[in-house]
Image 1: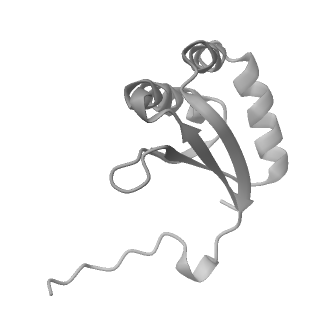
Image 2: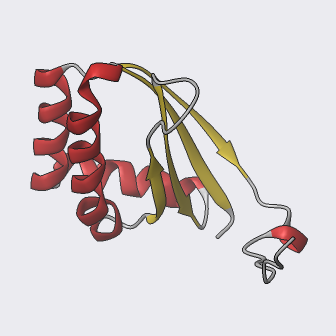
Length: 113
């Protein structure tokens, strides 16, 4: 993949279950519409009002095609409506990142200390 859309969400910390349900629904819709879902991440410790989503695409053009598909997809429309009706997302920002190829998807065996 050439680019990753890094989405940062400012969320209502009292509605984590709603955000988790929202993220879970994207697990079906995003791949069906052409995105490679890396994952959604909820707060665990520390700041309790920030969550993240990462989705990769071959190009920005592929991202634009994906966005159009997502808006016309029934599950996508339902999930956008769910977020609006429950108002658990306070703010959303996006950045497009490219990987440093020599580091991308590298896993080393974790050695005990």
